[in-house]
Length: 252
Image 1 (cartoon, rainbow, N blue to C red):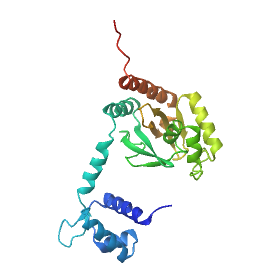
Image 2: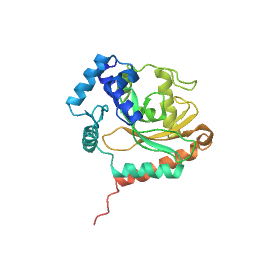
Image 3: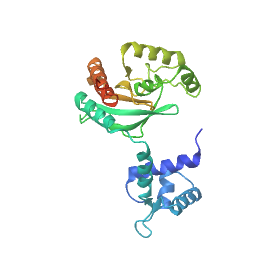
Image 4: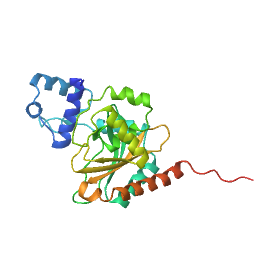
């Protein structure tokens, strides 16, 4: 269940991210389909708190730098290690495909770091993009790190929607796919959530955090290369594992 006021704040930010210029109260009300009174109250509250300002007199409102300052403060408390950023860059370079780090967000996986492919036809993704945790290779690589009891509790909150013919549509189907992935050595999606898109993912061995790393791209390019991409991903993860858990040096 969504909290309307919270959803409206997020919708407002997404609106400004698309628009990239100030908007008046009337424009906000019309564009977002909100009642004038509700728009006035929300904008007034955010302006009073310093999150919106008027760049020019009567020129409309725009998000203030306070959003960025708050986001940077939050991110700095739990940053991704430099080794993870290097891992993503290395895999993206070697595969030529969009590579991302996924993290759990309730019944979804959310991208917290992305390097997009430079190919003209590619998987367009950005930080904050959400995927159903059960219907994506990114999410299933996270689910695999949960205990059976934890997965059972999460399954009770999931609406098992069929996004495509290959989407696991119930608990048994998800569990069966997790078992296949364990034998295969990587998690795989062939249009399970996004049609015409292949995803190849693995758990990221970072202590005390449940993350996954995924390589994703168009079917015509990635499906024939799935095993090659998976091998590249696994080899990079093994190198990463050695960096974060170096072998002890010999002693006398």
